[in-house]
Length: 291
Ligand code: NAP
Image (cartoon, rainbow, N blue to C red; front, side, top):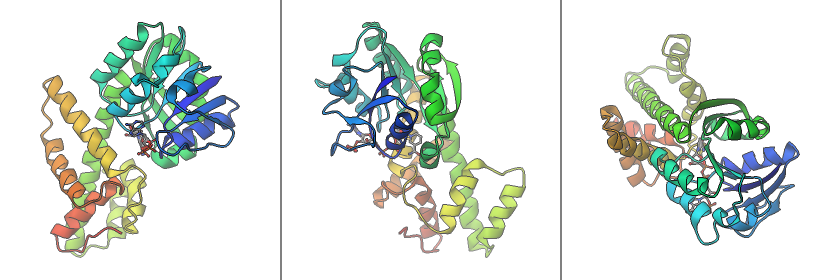
């Protein structure tokens, strides 16, 4: 298929590469420094990337970035033709997704929200999980592309439901990680060997994929970004704002948001969100300045 891929960050770059490797014709665009992906052509604007495409795939930072790449003067909208599919793998607001979809639907174009989980390693290994909102027809047409980048597609429901599922799932990741971080710091202060703690956690009923993924990095105090703190913080605000829209209270998440605010003030936005543990260590007098 002919695909425009917009956004070549931690996730977008390996995703575009996987599409090229699967034999698709890919045109890429990135906001800063026209980055290159081997085997793809490099476009000068989102509209240029989308001009001959059947599918426009986005993986950019946030709601404002999606709005910019699709609807700005040089945005992909300029090149949309009836029957095309816009797929958004960014994590953005479910209600904004409905507004964006309505606008492209008016031109006979499908909008599919297909946010992802699996982080940097999942994207590099083609092992992403997509949670998808959109019509059966569009989701069916995208199957070969999902297969090129991922291991599982869950069609959650109509447009917007992929984003709704994604922010709900990330809410659990933020809370589970915070639970792990607090247990890790308390037990360290009490003199427990962290390797023994992790062995115990993973052998017991509280074992967790989040701990599986993050513990090796925490043990090395390696906070290089897989999922940057600024993006999890962005997602926490999406969750809190969306909860307010539908009158749901999230008291535990409000507390975790404060940890992210303070970590951000420490200047740790571009570190992995695992660095929030370092703030607890600092408060506990256990060092805690991430490298
Ligand atoms: P990233 O490395 O920070 O890349 C963000 C991308 O968005 C870059 O290409 C950036 O362009 C672009 N961008 C930012 N603001 C823009 C704007 N106003 N206009 C146009 N482009 C803009 O982020 P990522 O980790 O790839 O994440 C991308 C999306 O996937 C996010 O929504 C994130 O929440 C979600 N996600 C990430 C992970 C993960 O583990 N990393 C996992 C699941 C979902 P520049 O290069 O010019 O800055």
